Image (cartoon, rainbow, N blue to C red; front, side, top):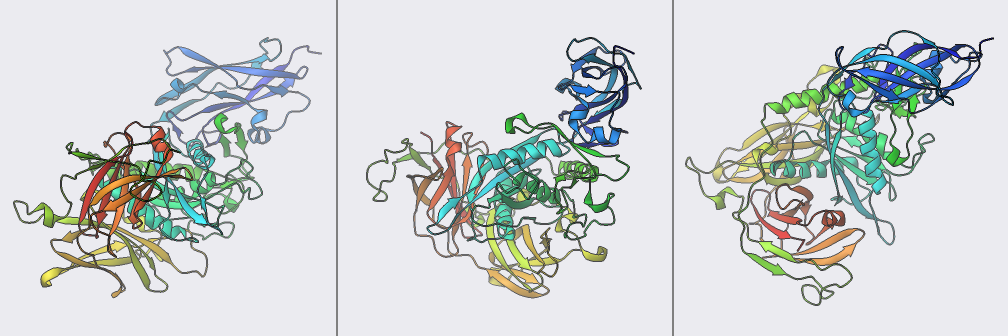
Length: 631
């Protein structure tokens, strides 16, 4: 009887999120990569073993040795079949490749050794040579995650996502999506609509925020996602179109009977963001069958009875998430409504193709606009607001910070800016509204002056799926001109909600940047030839006079604002924050009316020069001022 274990290498798999043994799923350069060796014992006593592989980037290049991160037990008398071993990370030898071995280009497993885990003695091993695979470059995922803060209950208490909700979503996207990295920013913003608001309400708010960010020079590649804590009420998620630029969904600690890591907003966010990258519902587990004919696996699974495709989660030590295999016939695609969700090869490759298409789509638009450089104007120091309002002592419970008002260099309206060499410059406005196509009604939610480059990417597919291959629904924005001039009319797509229930109304979003003409007087929203809502501007917007600290509450720093005149109905303001001294700006409030704006305290902790920009507007003209909230 042999006193030494003899082993055979049955197969090698190089995986990042989902893979087959033929390596048909694209490997993304710079993405965390695991090599799985499937080894079985053929003779001799059972033993615990570890592995070592050698990886070459070229035939002539040096080999890099990588040790397995685990040990497995091989028992010639009991060897599970290959499908069973692929479905359990504890039954394969797993190797985490160093980042230098996953750069763009080919990598070859040039040698494999198996050693006794106790003695370190090399064991006899036979089997096929290791595979050669190619890592392909791919764009990152750029996402801005906005926690939607709201008050709920009696007495009202503030509800907002936990820090875990943000970290879990970013981690899930990094592990599951076909990207080398997730470039993300985050903030908390107050909900514009009263609870129980819907995802249509949140998506409209996100679209308006995004338009102002893009107008300030933001990156058009960035998708926006709103997270709503379910501690007050459950808001069903959706994307505003397929593909889209904005989506939103709930988050919280519920398990749904299968997810026990303390947060479900990670895979839920992966589903809604998947819609923004053009992915439809496969049509399983009560969802709408938008992609039923194309989805390759039965029951919405990651794989089928051939056992070809197996998911793999590389894990995240920061969240105490271990490395694990995800059996293809037990888990379902993230775009279904089924339990036990991960990403299938079909969805993985579809999102990758959309990322590449967006890169190509936006390449022709040129780089993002550079943020405007504002000359250094006179500054007026303003103190902190005490209990009595604008006067009184500083609030000694919180660090004292000086606030300053900066006189704006100019107003944004063409009337105030004066005519150009060829007459008045043409102004553009961002118009965001919601419509109900079933009821034949709708409303204009937000109107703000913007730069032309604020327009969402010009993609005819972004309105969402249309039945029978017909063109998607549209609406008309009619911008009425004063003095009897002919109106400006712009046809815009209705970006249908991605989550329709059978028998419910068809709802959607209007999100457009349109030329306002030289003398805009009103905006009409037209559906099927009928005017369903009209926006009329108020008088010239008042300028910001001062800003004062009003204390902190629920993790936010309040800034009490004073204007030259009390805002009229139809006048609102937006708030933007810069944490790099005014180089870049992020919008944290739009359509605001209450003269107090709440700022995330974490912004103040991580920067020595935080600035607040307040833009008051009547929809067609605006005036802007800045305050420094860090002294």
